[in-house]
Length: 126
Length: 179
Picture 1: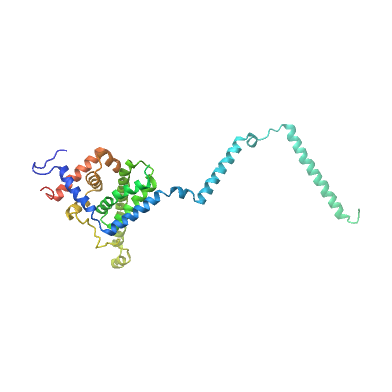
Picture 2: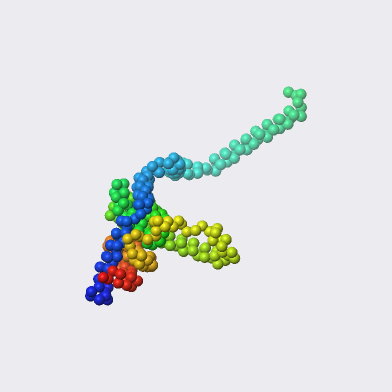
């Protein structure tokens, strides 16, 4: 930066330093109530810096973190056990057998229903 | 990472200057105190774990951001109330209903006691970036690199803003410091 001021005048740097010195002097003469409030704010800030660990110990945060861990563990267990994730292989015979079991159960139910109907129609028999 | 004692020491070393800078920037002592309190808390909560030598640029970066936020919200408030004033048929009623500016304590004043009114007025009148550059380079004494970090810009921009700030101040104050 070229300085166009005459030689007898201070350079920009010297001028800025004089202005800054006046500003620095002013900050040492702040009203006492302002200084007290600044000290109070500083104490609060330093205390806040020491608090994060305590904040992490809040019960709902712990429970939330525990719940998330439990959910994650459950998902991991399910994913890691193939028998839980894969459908059983059923061949045609097994499928047919399963269907027969259902039919047999149905037949038993129908027989029982018919027997009950007969009992209702002839209550003195039997 | 700094200890609580180091943090306390650092904040004690910058709190008065930060307040004075905020006061010059926002021209209201209550707002300036709020801003400095906010900056201290933000540094303590978010950046206390950083190395101690990184605290000054971080602190002044947060301060600059808070001052910018204040200017934005003030501008918005002025536009909003300006619109109300223009739209109202009975401006006196709205003036009575509208909450006034924050308390202006005449004892505390808005001026720094030992700074000439001309210098403070001239500094307050600078564009925000020039104001920042002058405050950080000349007042706080940060080097160009740290100032760039605090302002979130390049070192070239810092030099430009600072140079313009000094020239503007010299022009405004004539030969106030030229003797």
